[in-house]
Image (cartoon, one colour):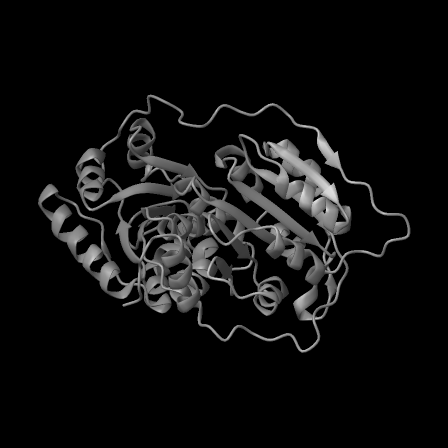
Length: 386
């Protein structure tokens, strides 16, 4: 049986120092060891997909990461693994436990996933191997994984069986001190004004965010496409697929690049899909992270079907989740005032907009890999595709 230190320290020598995931009893020794080591970072994600996106953001910022999960949560990670890490070519190490493995007695909820875990990785085109069982197997396994990730710039998985790693007692909790509740800044609407358009909001964002030292990360759908149409700058990223994951991607980047101002451009449908990440940002986010939610109450890019956002107090939720500065608004001035604010924790703006988009809205002519490589080069990473 391995000790957690034996694997984690071997991985650290290769640069893996950022872990994000959702606990499993098989993974407990790893999580406890990482939390107890101040030289390592552990992010407790709301779900496995958010963990993958956060590790992707960390890699964009220069940190090699490990996304850890139980196989019962592998389904939550399918979207970012197939439409984020695959499309943008983002490497990361995956450690997935194998609950319900064939021939091993386990709880009934693990039966089906236990039978198909390996096939799931095969179907997603993610190479995998069994997690090392002996000390001698660790370095060769990590070398294979690292070689693949460096060459292909895509994830590599270890599937961990029960009883692989010995217990490790947790000595610290490792979470930041909770922030005191903040007041919500209410921005007055100009009398008689019409709801703001997404185009106007994005134009103001571009005007007030210099390319140097600032990145704009736009959610999938019309937000990214309109941002591209307005101004295609090297500090932009246009998410494709992975709906709802832009906020966790932005958190991972902001955590590891405190020198950058990271502006997340979210939508109400996307935020509702992964609302748990608001709590994660409220806990781990710093003052360099600004979360702008453009809320038109609709899935605009698929025909403007209504979301349930009309019943949701996004600003109140962000406040309750620990964001350091929270505001509501309906016009460009609210956006400008929000961008001018600085603080010790993340900021959140709930900006109401109307449905509709730019006529003949184009799709980006640059590929996702080109967009990401350009962004990393702009931020001083100098990474290029394989």
